[in-house]
Length: 175
Image 1 (tube, rainbow, N blue to C red):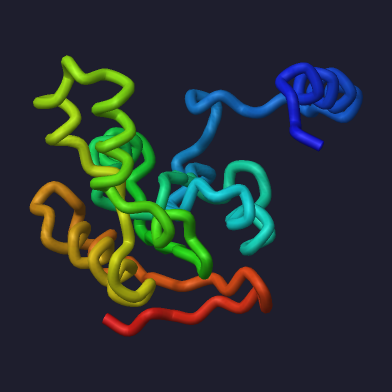
Image 2 (cartoon, helix red, strand yellow):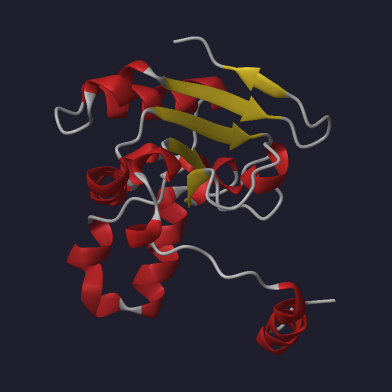
């Protein structure tokens, strides 16, 4: 069965029975701010809240196709200005959709849909993964570590993993 927006709204309504108000940022003490950043794939099979048994407020999670940090720098920096991240975990996973599509094929489809936007389409990147997952995780780590905008503490405490969809195991990527 395909999930619909109406079903999601019904689930939300049912969940309100157990809802507990969450603190506003202005109500949190500095020690209560999440310092952990998790960057992972948008794939609905790779759910960091489940992988790490996360509870509300423990970590900031960014999800983007392929789990590529390169597409999130502005977002990471904006929240870091408030939260001051001290650690980052990058999680990519087996059978990632980004290993199945190619940027050129996506662009081809977009050109058919919007032929007048050729120049804009040509500049787009979609995060295809052409090498190994380990290599792709390393690219994300290297990207963050190479940026002069990323705090040194965060660079030093960035680790990468590949999540196996079949076993649930996390394999740390050596950098």
